[in-house]
Amino acid sequence: MLAYTKTTEGLTVTVQSYFLEERSDIMQKKFFFVYFISLENRGSSPVKLLRRHWYIHDSDAPDYEVEGEGVVGEQPVIKPGTTYHYNSFCVLKSFEGSMEGTYSMEREDGTTFDANIPRFHLKARLN
Image (cartoon, rainbow, N blue to C red; front, side, top):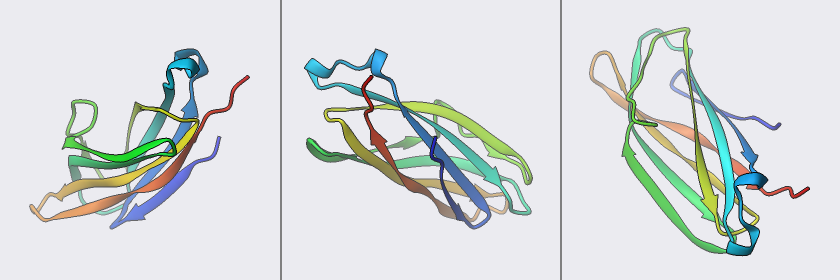
């Protein structure tokens, strides 16, 4: 499966997405996608993920945004040379769309930066 990658200030974000036909309901226009994210700290100091901000594009519905603290209920600290992994999901009303966004990150010295999440495509492939 295709991986999308982007590096911001030493933090590399990699995303892979998959369509889950068995969780989707085509007649109800609910297309279920799962995505797997890796955040690799290639920098020289720890970083903490404070917030997420997603832009979700659905080809048959208005775009919308999702933001909040951390990811999957956590605000992980990612040490240099380590990678944090998590997965989540998105339900679209159409066969395809995309997601992108940012993570608000904090360095050990209290300074912050926004790490870019690369735009990745969501496309239903029916069997």
